[in-house]
Amino acid sequence: MNAVGNLNTLESAPAAHPLGSIGAVDRVENRRWLTLAVLCVSLLIIVIDNTIVNVTLPQLVRQLGAGVSELQWVVDAYTVVFAGLLLLAGTLGDRWGRRRSLTIGLAVFAVASAGAALSGGVSQLITARAVMGAAAAFIMPATLSLLTNTFTDARERAMAIGIWSGVIGIGVVLGPLAGGFLLDHFWWGSVFVVNVPIAVLAIVAARLLVAESRDPDAPRVDWIGGALSVVGLVSLVTAIIEAPNQGWTSVAVLGLFTVAGAALTALALWESHVEHPMLDVSFFRNRRFSAASATITLMFFALFGFVFLSTQYLQFVLGYTPFAAGLRTLPFAAAMIVVAPFSAKLVEHLGTKRVVVGGMLVFATGLIVASTITVSTGYPRLGVAMLLLGAGLGLASAPATESIMGSLPLSRAGVGSAVNDTAREVGGAVGVAIIGSIVASIYRSHLDGNLPAGLPEHASAAAHDSLGAALQVSAAIGPSGAALADAARGAFVDAMARASIFAAVIALMGALLAWRYLPARASKEPEASIDHPGALMSSAPWYLRACACASGHTRLCQCVAEADHELPPCPCTALTSLDDPAEDGSVPVAPDVALLA
Image 1: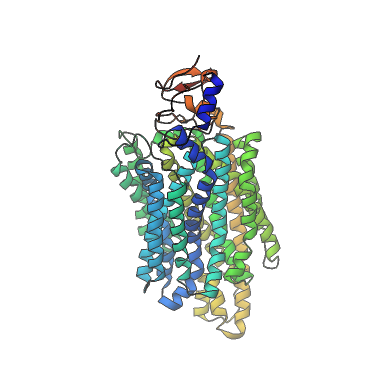
Image 2: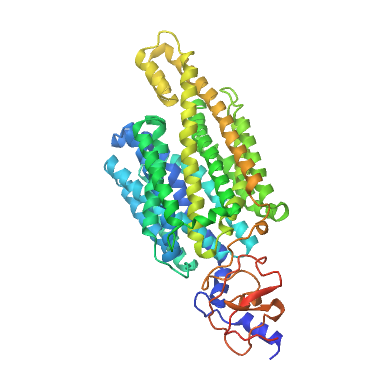
C-alpha cells in the first residue's frame, strides 16, 4: 500500500486504544470543548462560594447570633485552608490523577456545602467552610491542569485559558448577585445548598467527558515539602488577614509572619535538595514563569483591594441592596468575558509582553478613574471604572496564566496551576489587608475633623470603627444622625479615592515588571515543553503525533506509519505546540512504529 493509503488507514482507524494512544488522544480532542465546559462549571462554583458568603453575614448575626470575630472566620476559614493546601493538592493531582482529584474535590465540596447549610451554630459553619476550602484546593488546580493537558495546541490552549480566566471574573461578580437573589427568596442556607446539585452534575460530566491525566513518572509524594508549604502558606495568609484587626506589629501577627518566613525558607531549601521535589524551585529561574507569577500576584492585589472598597461604596454610600449592588458589577464581568478569550488572538500578533503590559495599563486606568469618584458622582463613573478593570484583567490575566502553564512540562501541570492559584489567593489577601488598613487609617483621620458637635461618645466610637457601624448608629441617635452619616460617607469616599491611587500604583508596578522581565513571546526563552513518556500528545496533525514518540529522529516528511497494522499504543512525548520540533524539522519517533523513507 502506498503512503496515501497509509494515511487514510490511520485517519479512519477506530478510536479503540487506551489512554496515551493515538485513538485515545483523538477522542479527547473531539470532546475537548465539552471538557472545558465541565472544568469551567467546576471552577465557577468554588469562585462563587469565595464571595457569596459575604452577603449572608447580616442574616448569620440574626439567625446564629454570630459575633464580629466569628463572622470574620466564616469568611476567612475558606480562604486560609484553600490557600494553604493549593501546592500540596496540585502535587497530589499530578501524582494520583487530575480527574480523580477534581471529582473527589467536588464530592467533598458538595457534602461540606450541605453541612454548612444545615449548621446549627457558628462553629459548625466555620468547620464546614474550612472543609469546603480544602475541597476547593483540589478542584481549582485540577481544572487548569486538565485544561492544559487537553488543549495541547498552543493557540487553542491560549483561547481555553482565556475562557477559564473569564469564568473567574464571572464568579467574582455572580457571588454577591446570586447570594442577594437567594436571600431575597429563601433562607440563608440556600447559598450553600445550591452548590450540591451543581457539584453532582459536574462529577457525572467529568466521569463521562474528562480524560484522566497524571505525571507518568509518578515519583513518591514529597510529604515534608507538602507539610512545609501548608504551614508556611496558612501562617502567611492568617497573618495577613489578622494584621488589620490586631495591628501589623502585634505579637501574634509578627509571630505568624515569623513562622511563615521560616517554613517557606525551609521549603525552598528542602525542595532544592530533595530527589523528588513537590515544587521544583528551578522553575523560578524561567523568567516566563516567575515574571508571570509576580504579575498575577500584583494584579490580584489591586483587584481584590478595589472589590473590597467598591462593594461598600455601592451598598453604604449609594444605598443599593446586595442584589442591586451585584447587578451593578456586571460591567466588570461583561468586559472580562468579551476580552479574555480575545486576548489569545492579540498575543499571536503582538506577543505576550505587549498584551500583558497593555492589560495592566488599562487596569491601572480603571483604578485612576475610580480615584475621581465622589459622594455625588453616583454609579456611572464607577461603572466606567469597572469596564476598564474588567477589560484590563481580561487582557492581562489569561496570557500571564498561559505563560505559567506553558513554561512547565505537562506532567507538572498540577503544580503549575497551584502556583498560579496561590499567586492569586495570596495577592488578593494581601491587597484586601493592606488597602483595607490604608482606608481605615484615612477614614478615621478624615472623620475626626467632620463629626457633628455634641455627638455621644459611644456613637463617635462606633463611627470610627467602620462606615457600616457609623450608618447603623446614625439611625438611632436622632437629629445629629444625618450629619454623622454624611460625614462618614464623605470620609469613606475620600479614603477610597486615595486607596484607588495606591492600587493603581501597584498595577503600574505589575506593568513595569512584565515589561522588564516577561519574554516578548514564548519562543524567546527555552521552555520545559517536552514532556515525559505517557503524557497526552499534542493537537498537531495526526501524522506528526504518530511520529512524536520516545526515541530516534526522522524528518517530518517521513512521518508515515506502517499501513497494514493497527497503530500500537506507544509512550509518546507530548509537544505543547507546533513550534516545539527541533530546528532541523525532526521529531522523536518510536522504535516500534515502522516508517517509510
